[in-house]
Picture (cartoon, rainbow, N blue to C red):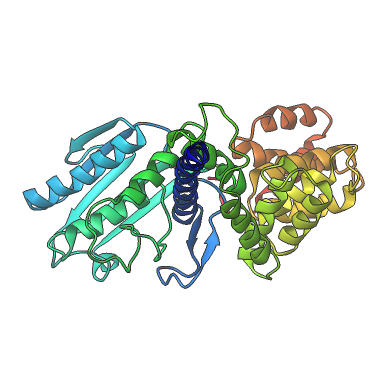
Amino acid sequence: MRILMVLLAALVLGVAPARADEAKLSAELDAFEQLTLWRDAAGTAAGGAVPTGVIVRWNRALRVRVVGRSSSNERASTLKFLRQAGEIAGLAVTIEDGEGSGENFKIEFFPEYSAPPMLQSAGCLTRYWNTGGALTRVELYIRSGIRDFDRCVSHEMLHGFGIPAHPHNLRSVMSYTQQSLSEYTQIDIDALRTLYHPSITPGMFHLAAMVAARKVIAERLGMIPAGGDANALARPVMDQSVARLRKLAEGNDRTAAIAATQLSIAYLSGHYVGIDRAEAGRYIRLGADRGAPEAQFAAGLMMSERGNPIRDDQAAVVYLEKAAAQNHAGAMFALAGLLASGRGREADPVAAYAWYMLAAARNVPGAATARDNLSANLSAAQLAEAKSRAEKLVPQPAR
């Protein structure tokens, strides 16, 4: 009997910590997804969430410029949150005062009674720019003298580090229901630390990021060794993520297009759901038919792939044209290649040259070389026509 009791005790002691670790992993992974991979469905009224598309974060050191007038306490508090976030993210932060240039993170204070209209109700506000998910510039505007100053600035600072969402069910400074919070919580710290792990990269898609985050968190909790296998862990959270994307993908709006694109990429790459080209094709068409240029580009590439069982060059040209017309640089380059070779449509070197021109203006690798190579086969009149056509194809200027 005594031996039996010892064995039972050992079993209980061995299982209970494992269950606790699994619960912690699941909670932290769920919070990471809610904070970094979803955003409010309609502005700040977080009645629901939609997928962001890709991971957005810094991949370079921060050069911060602080301008405008503030109290010494406001300035000190703002820089405290900046330094804390930078330390958690592992980013070097250099701070400069006064007017100048060369910064990629600008903090501007405005006097309480002469703040611009955008700050009259908000108190503080963040704007950011990114290329392929990599943040290139952040501007944080703060109205001096506002109530709950620390609450406002800590919230906006995390926006400036790539956290877009306001999940109200989390104890986070990002949640508008947690008005008493004025410091980063453990949930905020854990999500930011995971977001800036080297395996979570700018531009990473939804399910790929979830797979990587699960492993990062499991390693940090000591549930698996470094480089270990986390596939058996937190499956309910992963399944829920897939289920939400599937439900959204069946809609008829841009949200559905983004969700469908996420799923098509997951099925193409085997991120959690496994490789399934039939499902990838179905979701690619769902997304493309709802007008998302990313989905149209993915559909065009997949359908033009040699050896692909769902290859359809004519459909590929149609989808790439739709994406290119929405200023998708990759689609411009791919479309030019099809038109130059006569795949999916009669060869049209003039149109191909025009699209190569537009892709080269957007710095697509290989586009300038392809354009120059094609020019050797065109007459002066054809080149002039191609240049004229390029000006009319896409009204938006190159970014």
